[in-house]
Length: 306
Image (cartoon, rainbow, N blue to C red; front, side, top):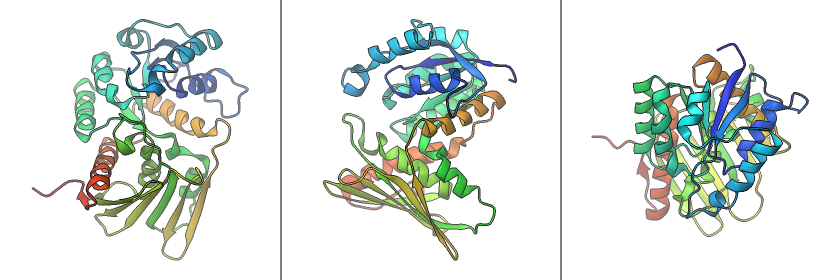
């Protein structure tokens, strides 16, 4: 796909919808992402038990319609029919599987916003559906593509990465299960640095803080510190053979979304998702095991033998 893409949005209960629309439509905006425009959007059915969903879908839908001139349609299928590629943005990860089932038969490239799913079985099922209909499918957090992290990992004078300690806010949003709501961001950073291959996770938690310790199959260790008290800064300390590099992430302006959106557009244009299916499934499984370990205090294996 080399032409300007006709894009569709499903799920207008997240601030990502107007942020993406602005970056795509305003060529004068810092971080502008060219290559497509939003031609249809479906608000979706807000989750009745989730205030961050039902409490803002009307406002965001109005913003898409009146500020950006996006036509609002009455179904997910109508979006898929009219578009070259689709973004499922619904803030509630519990609805992603059913929404994807409805649009997968159209065979259009799809991005699904975080959290991709709220169980590893649902994550695996979505990729099975994607393979059946030959749908390029991508999902990740915007923290994976922050300017500071990308610049550090693209340095050509660095040694192999031996481990990483990532940190960030880690709110909970019941009834969404545990770490899927905000833990996903910092865990995505950890996987961007370490790659897939984690075999176990152990969590220590109290009222204000959580610490997840992941052990990789090659013996490397990666940690996530989550704060509900104190600062809400994101960052990472990356360990190499002879150095350690601090990545201090600045959540300023729209740069946090521009990096992600540029990779989404690249995936749509090439048909090659920027994040492998196996890594996305493993991230969801990591969160699943971290939730279990937080409750039990035990080390949990991601993929038990046998």
